[in-house]
Length: 116
Length: 110
Image (cartoon, rainbow over the protein chains, first blue to last red):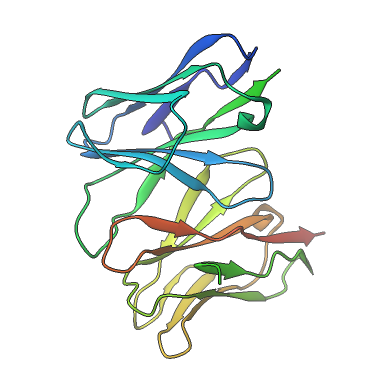
């Protein structure tokens, strides 16, 4: 149950604040992901890192800035967010990435973000 | 057309009943298929991978129909604890990235 951890679990921030979300995985995985989940919508992939290198940036606004200092840690830096950015932000990890197959992804508990 | 489509439900079933639902995917070249469950305000958790020949894990049975491009999940002898949203997850063709359905909600009542 503690394979992927995220902090904080809840965050309320104003539009002018700067905050960071943290994710840590203890599974020995090589790939890490940030997803956004809004109410009643499918998960949206935001960023992917493989072996600390960013391999995907899904047209995410620059007010979201990821950082992956090593294969176990992933951050999402937030600044000047908008109310529509309020959502559940989920971190996930997987064994790796490959061309045609997907490994199972394991999710952290998420950070529920409210932008006021 | 959405990459992954699911009936949102809810499927309301009594304890002990069998419930089944499908998910359709748009790209015939997809190779990896999963069912995840997500409890209210919690993270998705892997329930089971779906293999070509179909597979079973206890009370849960998953099937893949490549010709019609759908996967199914059947839950036998439903428990109250099975109440959750079930997410259908398919990889993008020739890609590692996953496409998530919006989920099917199942509510098991006593």
